[in-house]
Length: 84
Image (tube, rainbow, N blue to C red; front, side, top):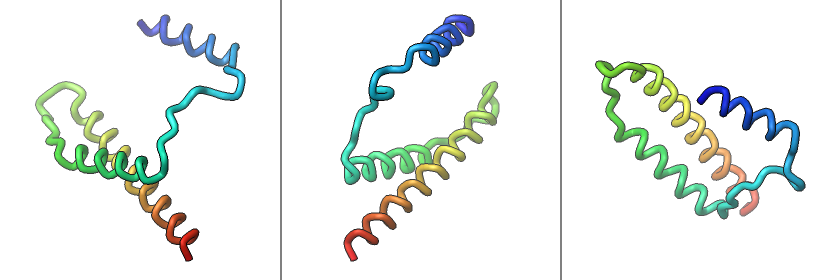
């Protein structure tokens, strides 16, 4: 599996898409709602420390939540600056 993944990464680096990578574009208000839902879902998650790898998953979830909170704050700050 690792070799397959690395092969895909190499191909992606060797052949960039014209115009950059394809991404789903979400309007800002939709993105805010998505970030709020992500934060709420991460808040509801209960770590199961007895399971293998759970500590790393909990740490990653906390980092993702922090990034989502920061991005949401940035978006709201940008919106309020535009609306002044």
